[in-house]
Length: 328
Ligand SMILES: Nc1ncnc2c1ncn2[C@@H]1O[C@H](COP(=O)(O)OP(=O)(O)O)[C@@H](O)[C@H]1O
Ligand SMILES: [Mg+2]
Image (cartoon, rainbow, N blue to C red; front, side):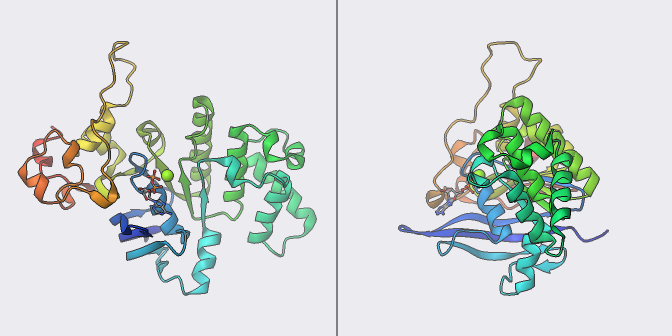
């Protein structure tokens, strides 16, 4: 087996705040193989973006802080940021796209200028005339019609979906080995969402990229992911391949997320089940299982002991004291 493209081991990170240090992500571990997509799922505020920023070396400084763990990218230890060549690796071989394509593009520069800047970054020796050809090629690759016209336009002249396509074209300009996509479709209409997912899937198949897809939407996960990590309050609740997770979700939190996906077969007007309660504040987590205050299976043990991640079956792990009696 070749090494995974990305190997994250026991990553913990957090922020110094006025109220002291708050750990946001605790001992997160996962691998992503070439050509595969890992979905990072969980409610808003559970630490998905912080995880991505930590991997990218982009945690806001000086408050953000990697407390422990390692991030290996194709065998290189990225946590050792003092090595300049590794900074380059991050810039060139790992790309990231964000939720809001308007804020990620510069409003005062044309699409062409921004694309050429990216191309120049990855291929400094490329000739000016070839830069334009390459820019046109990239826009075509991400399905942008009339690319020559688009090069002259400014971000506000494009629709949200088109802007996200432009960002994707910038992200793939350097042929990255890993694409980190943070809620890339959340701000878009449903039909556009589906088109962007399809585009990401095609690019991935054609380029053999590894992808980390961050989403709060299990529908998106089902559509595009191979492996899934369900996060709750910065911790792993469950990790499985997508079939295992959808067939037998083991963690009560994953079960709750599943139950809240609308089903076509359900009678109309039956309200969707919701997970009661809210995510506890990260600086005030229950002392046992972080989900215990919302979990209907919670007992004494859950309130006292934080469950470790346990193997339910090969490739399927769950952090719940009761997993054996659940998920049947
Ligand atoms: N710069 C920061 N300073 C302090 N806390 C932060 C900062 N950025 C994020 N956080 C906290 O980290 C937690 C996780 O945030 P985030 O990773 O953005 O969640 P998600 O992407 O899953 O919605 C939140 O509780 C948030 O308040
Ligand atoms: Mg986020």
